[in-house]
Length: 461
View 1 (cartoon, one colour):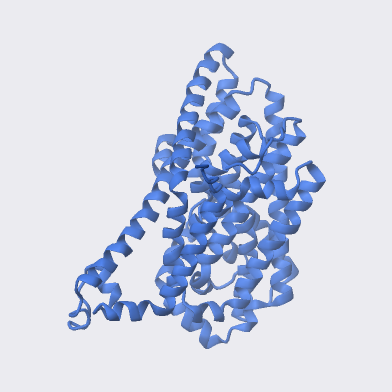
View 2 (view 1 turned 45 degrees about the vertical axis):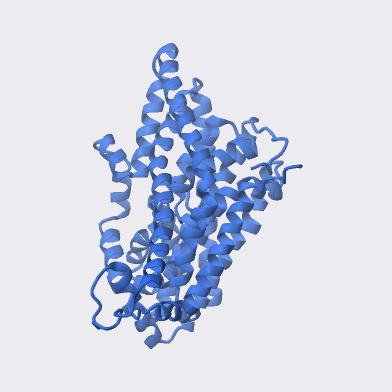
């Protein structure tokens, strides 16, 4: 009996994503009724194992409620373990792959050329994203669509989370960001997972290897290459669980996202998502057409697994192992360029984050009745570009750096509480753009170096 063809990985992930969205919508609409039928009227207390404010609220909970609780906790465990595994892999793969990429280049002129081309492309796309965000926010004025009473009600629900983000962001100024690039203790940076410091450490160590005897440097590079290959093998193994993990991650997000809040913030959400779509469907294809022979359909097919994982994980750092695999194996970019550009892009190339920060800054200004001058908006361009470089590649990392953008033009920080109400879903969208921008840069730089090969089947899983 002939075997049925196996579904490609990106289609498996898409199936998991759609299934998670459908289940999340059902739970959002009927979750309360489902719990009530099982004898639970305070599901938050029941799931947390805490006493409810009403002693009789969960008195009727029985076997069915216990089964529901088990399924909820199992779902959370699957999603959390998958993300923890990806984050576990992210730091070593950035360290090892960047050391190999830089240390394996004996031609310092080529290394400088790669670095210059990469940083120029990163800077140009980030500035395009910021300017695009400002134009969209000024044209469609999403902040004017929300009445003050609705604004205050939404902000009140997110006040605690906003205070945490504001406290983190206020510790970071533009000068502090520049200083923080250089770690005082690289092993501490590795332990904390400070990606930008890990990148600096890897680049410095790799550059040091280019300055010593090639035979001795080659031995070290060989070891780091073996470690990179080992991590890559773990990634391939881990990705078999991706469809199930995607379902586990997306279902609770959709279930918890209140439709009322989403409707109130619809204008802001549409401005951000619209800007991200312009980057994805117009700006990036234009750059590909102008600077490479790669068609966007070929590019999109090649990057689909990484883009889908970026959407559900909301973390470009966690997605990095899959990004590296897709760019190298599905788009034909050499290993050293892939490792150098994509790993660097995870910490310094955040087009989606930069666009969001520009829209959010103007949105908050409109929300609280501030008129931004042209000079202030130019400050936002500069600050958002720098803040995007310093944004950690973790879920909602851009919100922390939004504090820096708002303070640069004197906007009220309490507006962050309003943004947080819908930031989770927008963070998923902008992470796709961040990962796509990194991959685009890999292809452009590889073609500029004359080292881009065309895989025979870029759609292979």
